[in-house]
Amino acid sequence: MTESVFIFAGINIILAISLYITLSTGQISLGHGAFMAIGAYMASVMTVKWGFNLPLAIVAAAIMAGIVGVAVGFPALRVKGIYLAIGTLGLGEVVQVFFHNFKYTGGASGISGMSGTTLYLVWFMVALTILFAWQLTHSRIGWAFKAVHEDEVAAQSMGLNITYLKVTAFGVSAAIAGIAGALYSHYIFFIDPHAFGYHTSLLILFYVIFGGAQTFWGAALGALVLTLLPELIRGMQEWRLTFYGILIMAMMVLRPQGLISHDTINWIKDFFSKKSLPKTKATEEAG
Image: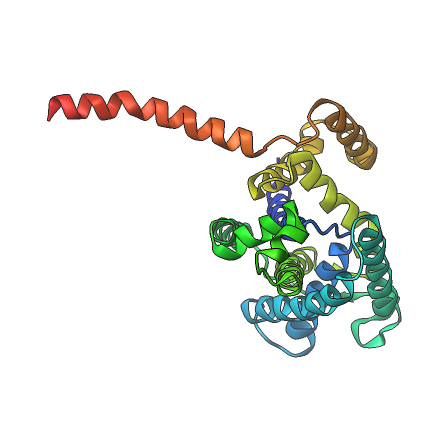
């Protein structure tokens, strides 16, 4: 297995966690390919045309994608469910057509000349993203996200600001997707608008559904497994989307909550707590 596979696995994990944050408030997004494109183009313009270094370009990509995410979050408040999914899918098409006709970034021909993404940089960003997601889910705003996801009306009656929470989730989620886009563009050296179509957003959703949308660990595991699995089975690359579709259908029947759920996390915690209990007793007896 080559280094590039692990680089793409890391980028996909960042994308999956970004979509998980939106889903944690009960909002379905099919526009994360657009946020990834905004980050990719923003970072590429900064390094290729303006001469900035990659770390600064990654920060700018996150800020730009986050601003667009916040802008999208406000109209998204008026719709939910399948209507929100279709609306965000439309955002993806708008962004794709924009870059297709925007000559400054190369239009349909795309932009090239980026470089600098390494395996260490990608997995450093993966570690930061996981740490951020862990901190978020254990914070007050993380619990508020969960309350909105479980029952929006009840959460509002308890005094939670639904508008602020949903827009924040969209903004943070888009910023993280923008970071993934910046890493992606600076690894493959060339991007064009076709790389960020609806199929990219659909793949990110596959990662989260397969791994489990209840925790960010599930989203990360889904992205890792679905990126590495086709590489382990030779000749599957051309049939990747078909294979993913079959897997998702099987998961819907056998385990609709995905590979990892809250019950899985609790079982793991109980398992290790029982394993450590005899050691604790032995230590006390020895003392």
